[in-house]
Length: 257
Image 1 (cartoon, helix red, strand yellow):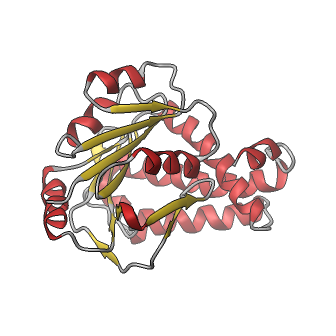
Image 2 (cartoon, helix red, strand yellow):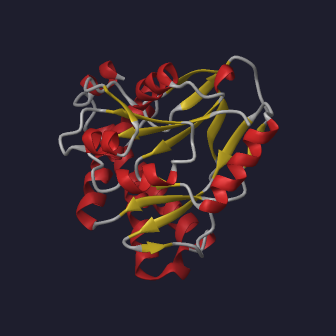
């Protein structure tokens, strides 16, 4: 069987890192690249047997992923965030890929876990490439929702079993995440030369809410489903508002990413 590195990004994830690493124990190398946590995340990861590298000079998600590539030793690399968990069914599917040794890129979809509830009745339409042959992977690029750059174009395949994503645990944490992703999303759009404003934000946020809550059936997931859809839609709104009204205030973010 080919060897596997599971590479995990962390920053102040002391509450979630144990579950993430425990789900990744089947890998030949569990690699953690930490962004300079102040809550002991790196120490917990070491206690659990992970190989830990700390880089406190945050330069964006792509830079951290590229550091993971530098330290990875497996034939394949699976990239995780600390708020994600591999289910037993997904583990078995990944191991079947390792036994074949096939070339390709494998994308996963999420089952969102929000405010203590798995939103299993909500349809997931987003597929994110996460499993790569290490020899094919050159680097990642992008401020947020980073994109992979391959040495040779590969056909994207899909892993059928979903990845658990603990995306929203508390209202307070969701508000902090809203602020972070608002800024990063505004920076990304500023680089593309897009314009923002309240009306543009309302159109984006409104469309996002209808898509998630109605078309993807978030409405079948109770209050937790409503809150999840609302917070994601607010990110869509505020990133365009920030693009218009915070222009010039996140220049330092652009320089660092």
